[in-house]
Amino acid sequence: MAKLVQPVNPPSLAKPVGYSHGIEVQGGKALYVAGQVAFDKDGTLVGPGDIVAQFRQICQNLKAVLLARAGKLNDVVKLTILVLDKSAYKARAREIGAVYREFFGRHYPAMTFLEVKGLYDDDQGCLIEIEAVAVVD
View 1 (cartoon, rainbow, N blue to C red):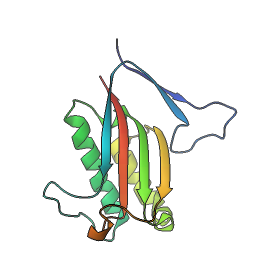
View 2 (view 1 turned 180 degrees about the horizontal axis):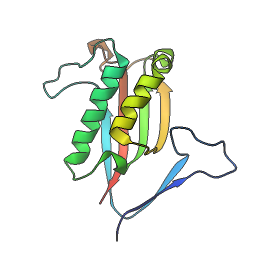
View 3 (view 1 turned 45 degrees about the horizontal axis):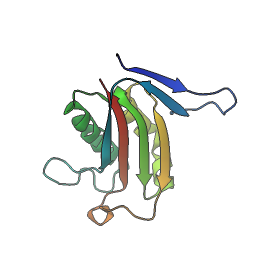
View 4 (view 1 turned 45 degrees about the vertical axis):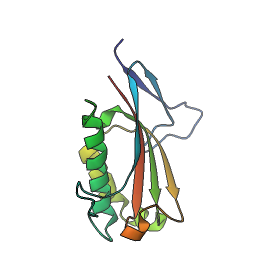
């Protein structure tokens, strides 16, 4: 059975911008991606103090995990974005959005955005962490 992915955006809910309210998936295999921070392959933080650079590295890390299972970023059906400072994220939202579109195009999975008190690696300078759920063929 070929994988079928369908956004679920009922007209009884506000029109989503940059995300989908839900995603229905038929077929494929689930791939759960642990929270990714902006470490490169050597464990070095990319973009200290720069949330856009960190977002870019995280997208590269997510892509690497998906490619390891013959997937692609458009296979992501759910993203959870955790940030230390919501206002810092919003202040650079246009730049982050441009990076998002470089990697995901106009693919908008279900998303949750949270401002948190701390991240496991915030003592290393991490400002953002993103986890994903994907369904690959």
